[in-house]
Length: 123
Image 1 (spheres, rainbow, N blue to C red):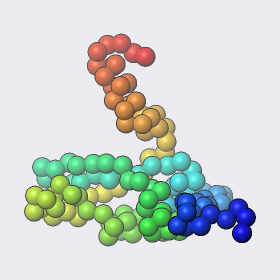
Image 2: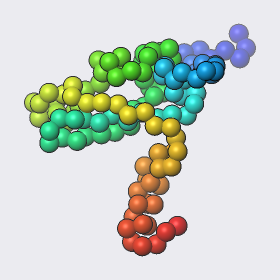
Image 3: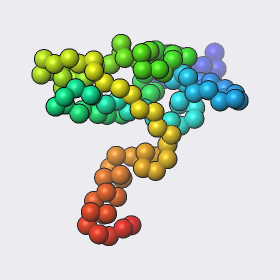
């Protein structure tokens, strides 16, 4: 078969869902299609751990049609720092970001910009 990518040879084709209006961003696929991002933040006292959620990896694991509400995503995550410390590792929440400044820059670029502002020289 010409043009077909076998799963064991290369990556499977990643098809994004069609965006329809009125817009309702309710699945992982729609988040990816619209270029949004999700961060996770631990609310446990003394932790404050946070990080970005890899939506592509999550879509491969759960599927593009998986809902993105907190209660739908929580069973698939935990706070690694709290788990290592023996605390409750399920006290966290998700924040959905549209990719606008400052969220559209990669972490290194964001840190460089922050350092430039601290040092008084704006790029």
